[in-house]
Image (cartoon, rainbow, N blue to C red; front, side):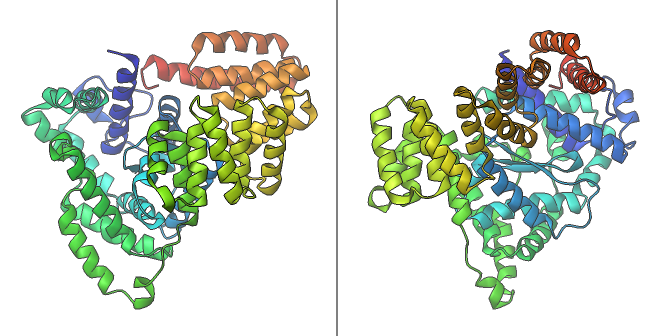
Length: 486
């Protein structure tokens, strides 16, 4: 079995264990007695620990989007929808997963993940918000709690085996390979224990609609989202999507009662307009920066005369990811002529000029981008690296540290910060952050090497405390690795 398949199997198995049932943190159940003994012994402390482990798993194994504009956009949207939720025991922590699946999910302890495919495949922000509202409604209506009760006749160990089989088949691009492992009564068990009931889905639709409307979105967003889900299901083929893994069954029926409800709403709510300015920017960044470059280029060129300034930027960014520098420069020239005063345009051409090795131009563009939008940490990251490259460490280090504090578990950022510190002569902190980078990359050997360096350099009490925090994190993650949770 290849490493990606192992990782996918582990991820999906743990995700569904977290969602479908409770187990005692710190002990992976190996027998029915062991698994069932802890099913209902689940405190807020347990949930916090479980959520932290789940978050570490997702962030270490799945590619997360660290673009500051995308992260801020999704965070604002989720928080906007969540304002109408009843008080929750944990604050929301939001991540964006780079994956074309049309999905979003809420994990234990307030962790919420949105897939880029949700933004890329839907047509309006209200539709993305509707899916998020629906998923959050499952949480607030305690539909997961009712599923816990069903777990009394199914061990988590059995569930892991079933879901791992599906994960392997899906990861290999052959769903039937996984399905072959769960035929007969086991397949029925998966449907029983993993599927929401029709009543659960109806309630999540209705409560989710409440959250959507309270957030100020057009209610048609939920209808539009479900219509897209139904259309994509037919395009992909029903046979490739097992019924018991379908997140949204009975879409046709649900579209009917949702439309009926919208028709009964006040005219002022029904007539709300779509506001997609930020959504289209996010969609462009995702398509141009994270989708397959030839596919993205084909999309934009297919627009022809309908291309907007934003589309021209998307074409330039996507082309800039290829080896055709001349074509990319032409595309950027056209994009800059159209909307070059926007900090996003300045950021992207700055990044392109770094690739072109025209560093002075890149530094000018990135500086202007940061001045216009100080909250764009992606632009700040690139600008800080350029400043360090020219020896301006006094300016670069505070900028990179600000980026690091916003993305503390990002190995690339930790590495860049550590390298800057080393170049500036701060060896203790340099090895400290290079150690963090190795820990977050799950590179045990490199982490041990860097931690030894940190230990040798730690002299002051403050430095020893920093070392202790690092060693504690390394210990926790090593334990998760040994138990194959990471």
